[in-house]
Amino acid sequence: MSESAGMNVIDAIRARRSIGKLEGDVSPQAIRELVELATWAPNHRLTEPWRFTVVTGDVRERLGQAWGEIAADAQGLRGEERAESIRRDVVKLMRAPVLIVVSTRTDHDAVVAEEDFAATAAAVQNLLLAAYDRGLGAMWRTGRIVREPGVKAFLGLEVSDRIVAIVYIGQPAMEAPLARPRDVDGVIRWRTT
Image (cartoon, rainbow, N blue to C red; front, side, top):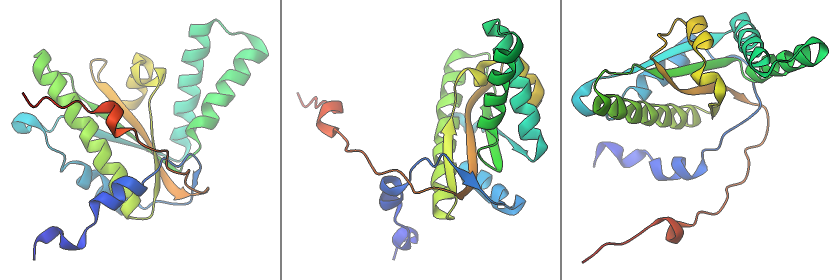
């Protein structure tokens, strides 16, 4: 019998959904296991380019405040409009008890940098599937926040690092959304001759 006989990866791929409302506690040991499983992703040249910055507790609020101020400044917001915009950004980062900021270094060689980014994205998928397997909810988020130098500085990252995902992790506090149909015929091309 093969090692994978008891594991049903295909069902996990089809069943996992992004969960937007998360609550509860997630132990440091559980987070460590998710990160360890993420690092089993394939990566060309075995560069292991990924980094995982775990954000919990009040740091989520401080990160949201820092991002909110940067975004409000970029939009030229003032007064109550500015305060409300910052409040909304703080609330977004408080939707889960744990945020895992997954980043990759940017190699000076453009080909290696591209391969490292792809490997880190594969690591995020591993993390999401591992969270699902452990009964945790998770959601992969990006947006302008991931490209902002001030956010990278807040997280202790280099300006040249690329944030691939902010993964929200916690106990599901809502039903998983229904699966949408997939149009395989619309995305596949056969070249047989």
